Image 1 (tube, rainbow, N blue to C red):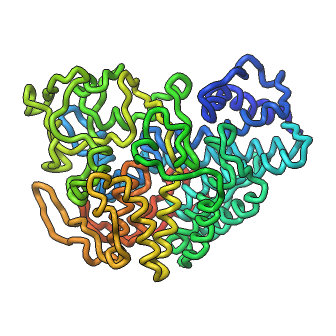
Image 2 (cartoon, one colour; image 1 turned 180 degrees about the vertical axis):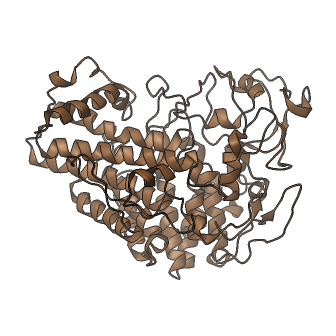
Image 3 (cartoon, helix red, strand yellow; image 1 turned 45 degrees about the horizontal axis):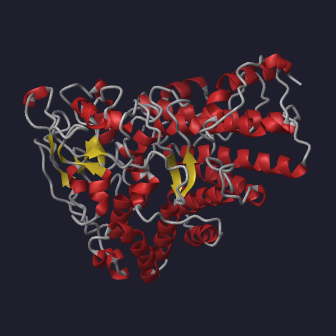
Length: 545
């Protein structure tokens, strides 16, 4: 036993345990911060907290500045961060992401890589501690379930690496020699590893859906992750697995665990959403305990400073990020998701007073958000609809209290529908899509119905450049199953996934939108950070970089 290594690892563990305890629940009654590493003797009662430590990286990976959320959204066709009167240039990083001109030195490239591998290292450490008996688990069923959960969680981190970077090292050992440099694996090898880890773990994962399993990988969350791997298998490996994806989705749909669509999509994203029947795997967030500065601040990034008065925010927001007008134009006006997910028009204080612009060339003018952006290099406060899919509660701080639904039941339904569509069962796919649409068209129910023939049509997105300096017309009629891609956008916008969907439909590197022109098919994956290649000579850079 390497006692020094245990103490060092536990030192890191104990510093974060209080925060981690609250990552799985919004209540806690045990503080582990009082113990010193060499005094800590874990028992089976500590297992949920110790496992919880391995989940903390998902929040940081997804939502911290320049993380997985931005990597998936800012380079896609729904969201842009144009220059604003108060800045948002930041060395051009957001523009480079949008235009697909990022480099091997971008912060977003480093942050997503490092945070993901930190999560993997934490999983490896805890697995090692369980397997060596330092974390004692006498009950065989609990032992197997604990390792299965950790292996599935680790697989979820590798899912991010497979999706973003492709060819990455697979590291499963914690007790390695000093100076160890892992070998690089191919994307197919990473895919196979993830699928194997999940499928071997599924029999031991809990089938329970309760507060005890909320925010953790139970069997149904594991199956959702597996379905996502199968859904994107053709991108990752060149071989499709549509039928396997359907089979995984069917297990969740027929589980009897109680997952269901909310009657109103907004219920999934309200502040107190932890009891939503639609959330299969959520990241628990509470601003009293998850106190990292950028823990969950999409509202701060999208609201203008004057909009502090709209929500009585404790801090002034920064106002930059908005919707790309071409995307907004794809919505049916009767689609409730348009008004529920976006801010538009005249903005008012919580007391009902009209808000005014406070900076740029429109100081003193009414703050009327319009569906226009002149250029990525210049815009005023009024330009672009802002984001409000996640409820912004009155009195919110810079951290929202909403849990983040990483996997939700609507996604399971739409994964199955997409695979049915791709395997020639478009009418069956249309039945599912209609079910998801029905809650968005209560004011005009007839519009909820979509047919299989319609799902076979192209996209209604009017692709092409739309800036002051360039305008082109590319349309979306030529996109195979483009209407289904539109359905994904209408349902899942702002959820940190658009890049992945666009890649699967062959659009991400082939179509122009706003200020983005195609810049090479190799941009479908990100480069390995330069600094990580310099410290590990076994790594080869992804093609094109």
